[in-house]
Length: 213
Image (tube, rainbow, N blue to C red):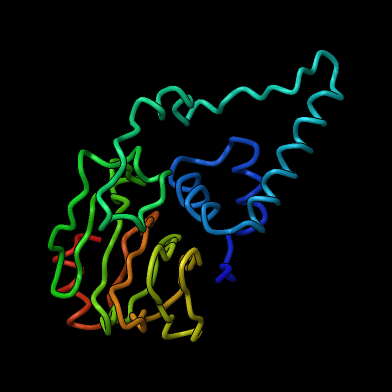
């Protein structure tokens, strides 16, 4: 099944130019492993960018990497051995941010996670596994939240949108919603936030205290 929820066009353009920050690059790179449509779009943007550089005086088609991103060689050194079969859903772009062999750790009742060596401000990116039927209580966002479904199904309680493998849920600052795991099996997601959430319910506050997001 093809993803139906994609990164924004300007985010793909940033990624293609090498100008996107690490957290956005990771989310998009993982989405691209599922989405042929966006891979084709990024390839076209890269070709257009190279042609534009070639047209400039002294252009050679090469773009200098932005200073806030580690060079490709540094990323390659952080690559790990193939993951165990039970972690087959974790896309290769995430492997470089794993601190040793992955292990799902308890985060809250119904929630386990694999912490990643990547933070946005002081918010750590995570691979999160939700139990079937789990409900993320109503909360609002103080910044951008990106949830990429790696396996399973997630439904937004506010918009009723359904997110499956490779789909990207983006919630902007000021938005409010709940999230429901509507798959019969656990739902595994890459979760990246630029700011902490603000829970609206008592259980949500307890869950926030347990998870630290």
